[in-house]
Image (cartoon, rainbow, N blue to C red; front, side):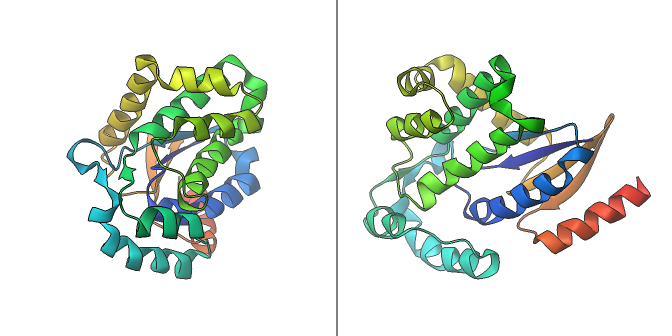
Length: 220
């Protein structure tokens, strides 16, 4: 079996779901061949714009995410980004960063860790950069600093982020999400041989995931 985790770095519910996804995979990774993380492209095209345009919604929604999931949105995000309002929110830069990281994993299997879990960790860290550390989504240097923590060269990482090749890979992720018919994030799909099973759509707590997994193993 393989997990396909379709998320978006700017999805608040994905930020809330990240610890649950990590815990579930860590517990069951011996039962999976690997995990593939796909950027969904939630904020692209005409959805890209200043966060101030959707700030009234986020100011309510982030509290719902905190209350239900237990994650915390950082003061730098709440004050410097959300309250200030001029930061351009776009899914493209963090999606490119994930594409660069995934390509580096292909070149260096040691970077992937066991069952590719470091890609899952990197995706979670991208969300923390935005929603806890409060970076501007277009600040490529911050993605480079994150990559450095995984043993990659910061300058080389940022250079690759500026290459059309990696934006194309990010766009391929967006297309894959559409091909799966995903219309909400996070979405978790389990692939078993040639069959695909919708495992979770939207935030799901760990207990529910465990029950679904046990049920799926007995019925599939």
